[in-house]
Length: 155
Figure 1 (spheres, rainbow, N blue to C red):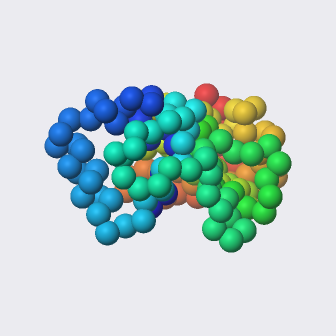
Figure 2 (cartoon, one colour; figure 1 turned 90 degrees about the vertical axis):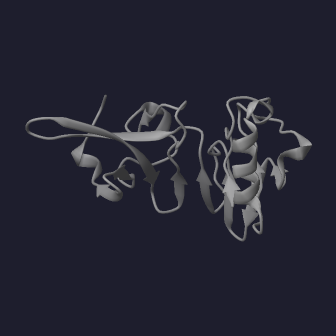
């Protein structure tokens, strides 16, 4: 299991977990390799957190890190930007968390309650993906929906 950073609101977030939540986390970690990649909100993690702590990890040609690198090596999975996408229909629009990818790089959505979502059409994604290669996969109704960039709307 690899957590791509900002797992806690700040460097002291783990210490504020309730005892039942700590037991749940311990149970999730039991029997698994667990790596905490540090993020901009949790650059340091306490020694008792369990698992390994790293700035990034490489698995063959794949690099997993918190912030997408400006110059990617081969392939990358990152977090940090918390992608979301908006689709406008005839009668209404829908905005959902989304995976953003071009087939070589993927930026994962945030799954926590404290993180918002940045529209994949936002200029922050422009240096990461060529507009012609960007694909969004929206999360909704218990499914993943691939949506062409032409069908996406700005916020």
